[in-house]
Image (cartoon, rainbow, N blue to C red; front, side):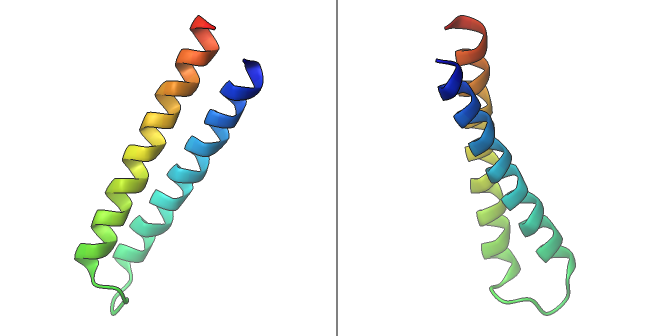
Length: 63
């Protein structure tokens, strides 16, 4: 079970790094795709990272 928790921690870190990339892309002028799409992608990455982080914490403390 420890390997599953580590895998979920790694996946959450990857999603949060993707969120950071999209947030940085929002600050740049004249970026393609449009900012609305980038905001949606950042929200999806952040929610995915949060879900994987919660799963990792559950596996760490309860299994």
